[in-house]
Image 1 (tube, each protein chain N blue to C red):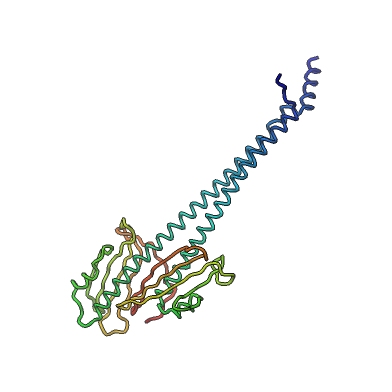
Image 2: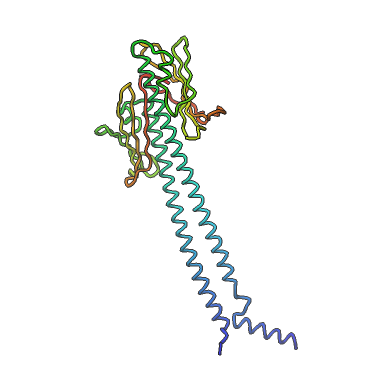
Length: 138
Length: 173
C-alpha cells in the first residue's frame, strides 16, 4: 500500500521543511533584533537626556541667572522657560529631536530651585530638581 | 562480480539523489539558525544590559541631585540664620541641621569664620552620601560662605566616587 518516496521527492520535502524552519527562525530573530535596537535606542536616549540634564543642572548651580544660562546652554528663554533643542546626536546643529526645559523659581533665604526635564517630543525621558543657595563661592 | 554490484548500487544512488546528498542542507540550515539565534539573543542581552546601566545611571544622578538639593536647602537656612543679626550659637545651628537624611554634623570655630560640615545620605542603605564642608564667613562680608568640600563619597571607607578635576570656576556672586 505504502509507496516509498523517491530520492528527489525526499530532497524536495527536506528543502521545504528546512525553508519553513529557516523562515520561522528568521522571523523570530528579526523580531529579537528589532526589539534590541528599540531598547538600545531608548537607553541611548535616556543616557543622553541624563547628560543634558546634568549639564544644565551644573550650569544652573554655577550661574543661577536664566539669561546667562540660556547663553551658556545655547537655548532660548521664553516666559521664564528656558528651552534647549538637541538633534538625534545630542548636538545643537541638526534638526531638533530632543528638548530640554528648565524653569527657575526663587524661594526664601536666597534659595533658587530649578526643574529640568528632557523630552523627545512624545514622552518625558528624564526629570531633575536642583537647588542652589546664592551668595557663596566654590 | 561483487565490485560490479557495488558500482551499480552507487550509480543508482547517484541517479536517485541518494543518502549522501540528504541532510547536508538540514545541517547547514541548523547551523545557520543556531548562529542567527545566538546573535539575536546576544544583541538582546547586550541591549538589555545597556538599558539597565542607563537606568542605574539615571537613578544615581537623581539620588545625587536630591541629596544636593537637601544640602543646598540646609545651607541656605544656615547662611540666612548666620547672616541675620546676632550670630547664632552652635546648638541653634545644629538644630537647623536636624533632618532624617543628615548625619556627621560638625561645627568648628575658625579664624576666618565658622566651619560647618554635614553629610546627606543618597540611598536608603546609607552607603553613599554627599559630604559637605562650608565656611560661613563673618556677617557683613559680600561673599557670605565658601564651599570647602562638596563631594560624593562612601559612608565609612572614605572612598571618593567624584574625584573629578575642577575645570571651570564659576563667576563670583
